[in-house]
Length: 203
Image 1 (cartoon, rainbow, N blue to C red):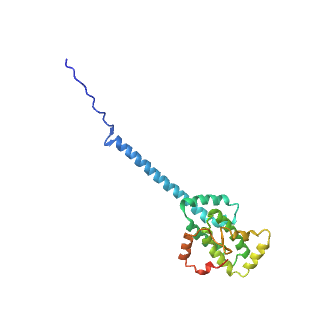
Image 2: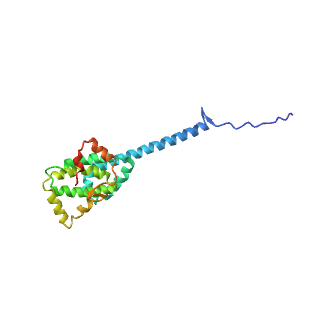
Image 3: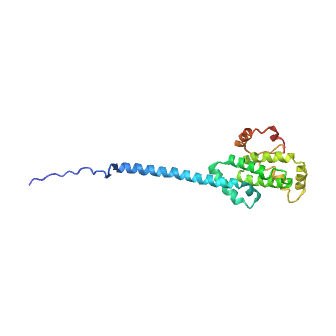
């Protein structure tokens, strides 16, 4: 009887058809990477959809301030992800022109809404950039109203409305004028819309 030395061969890699263990690992990594990318896209889509909804409701959110603070907080979180501030400015400007800046609105109501706009946008964007871009058409319209000065003086002498003086100067002052702390895309939007130097007159 001849003894035969049995030599063990290296273990073969498990295969499933033409797919090796290494290939399965690569595919798993690719699937995980693809899942992460699609998850990020889905999250961004959800944030953008939510921002679109809140932006379309922004006028009413301002009217309801400060009861609408939770909605503003949610929108602020969403805009931090989507950076849809230019869309917010464009939408709110159009809404103001349609619902506020017309002959049928009382000057005192316009001023009250403007005060709420200052407060709400300060919560949404403390830099003042968004407020600077939105407030210019409101200021221009109020300058053309004959009773604007009278309404402002009445408001400033009313104990319940004296915060108008304070709100117009929030965000920093320069020579007695309200100025936002930061300006970037809002200036570009104004240039694109062809606004003249009258916007820079003292309010």
